[in-house]
Image 1 (cartoon, rainbow, N blue to C red):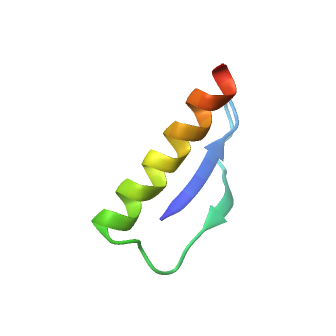
Image 2: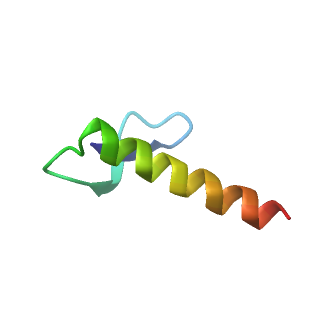
Length: 44
């Protein structure tokens, strides 16, 4: 799993965070739920 960003017209990709082992579906769902919870809490 790689998190990356691309600058406007640049052809280069800059990796900011990566993992060599992918999470299971359940672990990924948990991570998404936690992130959603944090986002919703910060909006209040």
